[in-house]
Length: 191
Image 1 (cartoon, rainbow, N blue to C red):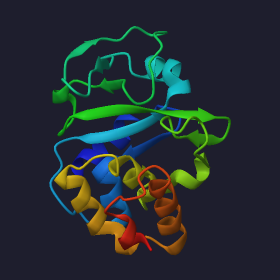
Image 2 (spheres, rainbow, N blue to C red):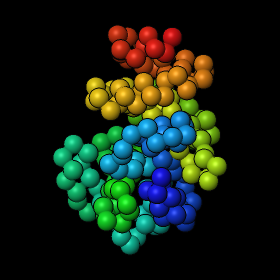
Image 3 (cartoon, one colour):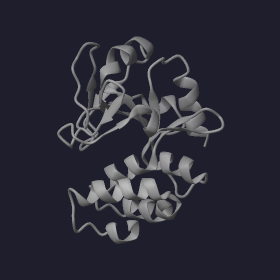
Image 4 (cartoon, rainbow, N blue to C red):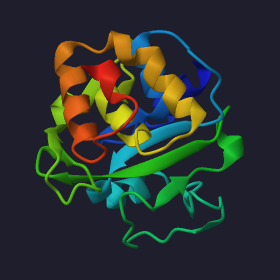
């Protein structure tokens, strides 16, 4: 997990909340590397963009279109939107590319940016931490994001960790997938 140690070191001076997200977060939850990863997803709160800009000045991250990979300069103070906007550090800065995704929040709650503000969880509940102090996103949130895709790696990730979810996490994930996708193929596994 060399890439994660580099991220932890790089974010040591960042005083806002951040989480390892995506497939790496599921690996941290499962306590094993389940598959190869091409990058590291990091989640920060969109409300902390000024702090991101003040902390990471040299080099400053760029804004990357997640669909095309096209990058453009990011100017501090520019409003970015959770979901479509992603920040990227130069690929040669870390052992694997690091992409920073933005999370919506309200006070002490994470807010699902696709759920009209209805779906939320306390920030402390979505935060898990390794013995080495690396913060990572709770697996039910990672899988909720992955449930919107039919990519084989997302389905593989789900099946790799579904049995490790405790009843509360399984129920939460089931209910929040079923509310949007009542025929989703993962639902029978979560019952």
